[in-house]
Image 1 (cartoon, rainbow, N blue to C red):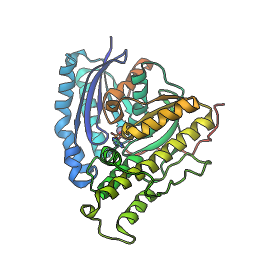
Image 2 (cartoon, helix red, strand yellow; image 1 turned 135 degrees about the vertical axis):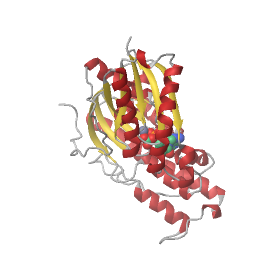
Image 3 (cartoon, protein in one colour; image 1 turned 60 degrees about the vertical axis):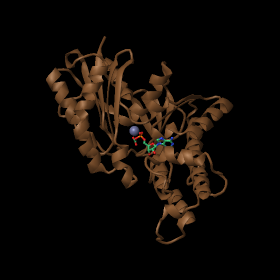
Image 4 (cartoon, rainbow, N blue to C red; image 1 turned 90 degrees about the vertical axis):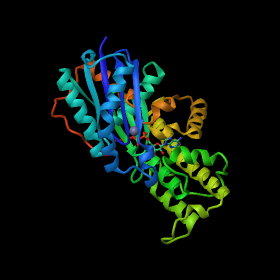
Length: 350
Ligand code: KG4
Ligand code: ZN
């Protein structure tokens, strides 16, 4: 049975896992950097890459030890080389290349966003394609037509901030800490989501499958602290107002995400929705999707929380490439940004 070491360092989690070609994870190690970025209210790229350098070898070592194997047992090394923060990506890529070279095994390039969707395949334990893929993370909010695990066509995406970024920035304004998503979710449990009428940008425009969250962030700032460039002192906010704003923002973000996902299903005629990325850990978002799936009769796949936020197990998409003989050369490079692809027609498959 083939064994693959997968490495993930696209943002602020240093992760490694050992998976076999039957898609079983023998180990999974994630070293979170949340504590390092907390005081800045967001991920600081330079701090992230330095922390990856310190952690990558202990994390790989722990993944091998937990799987009770050594480097000599590996049949391939896989690494997420796109998209992400350049410095962070480079650390994982250099480690993976070095290990592939030393172990004399093939290197496999993993697309981090495809891996987030593949987490649905892993959790379901059966084929989930073709499907609409919705990726909602700190850096991305994208809709894809996923014909197979490796055939992704973009249908739309955010034109400014990502959904997770909106959660993080609003949490910072509300003084709720970092990462913002879980903090906003917790505060929202005590709040009234109808207290503040916030914008749902692009939701009414059914000619496109794009998102926009930066206006929402500005609207929150104006409601909390007034127009102009006021000082944003979260400590002066009333706790009930904070909870109500958290609930109102969460509801607005969920409405936008769910609205476009349903539109994508309608327009393409697909009947499966795969959701991945950190924001997919949001409980009210999951519950809303579950209710809609039951009501409209589409199949919903959302991984458990540990497979939603960044991890290396989802790098098991490398097994698909391993079986197809799709290996990367040792001069593989990182690609930090998303490739700009012209908007695709939102129609049913030809
Ligand atoms: O996929 P991920 O771990 O890293 C990236 O690739 O960006 O996503 C991180 C994002 C952060 O913005 C975080 O606030 C958000 O996922 N997040 C959540 C929740 N848990 C994590 N957002 C809303 N509700 C949550 N429960
Ligand atoms: Zn991610």
